[in-house]
Image (cartoon, rainbow, N blue to C red; front, side, top):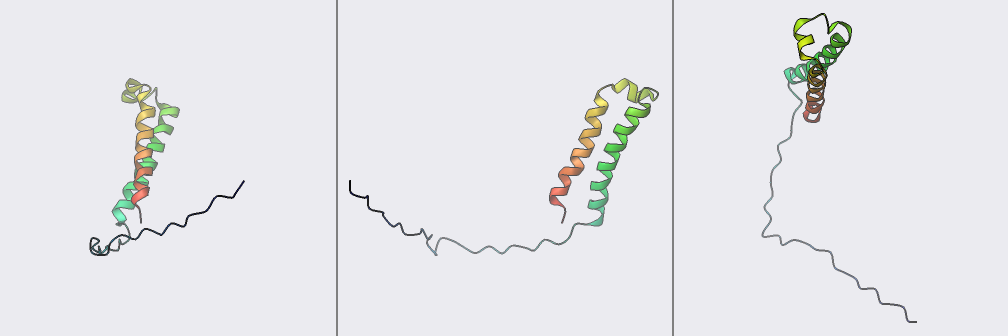
Length: 88
């Protein structure tokens, strides 16, 4: 059986007249307050969970929240972790 022929494709180049160059502003380092809030949220979330495990039944409002304490603690920690994506 004969071997099939291989076709060569030319690389696509967009037209030069339709593309306008865009200047990208260099992003500087994050503000120190951003870092403090980011790490603060992670630490407060961790502290919330630790306090819930150790003395959650002795603290009135934490006992009323019940299992919502886990959601609050993890939400605080995850919001701090999500802030790390914009940290420079």
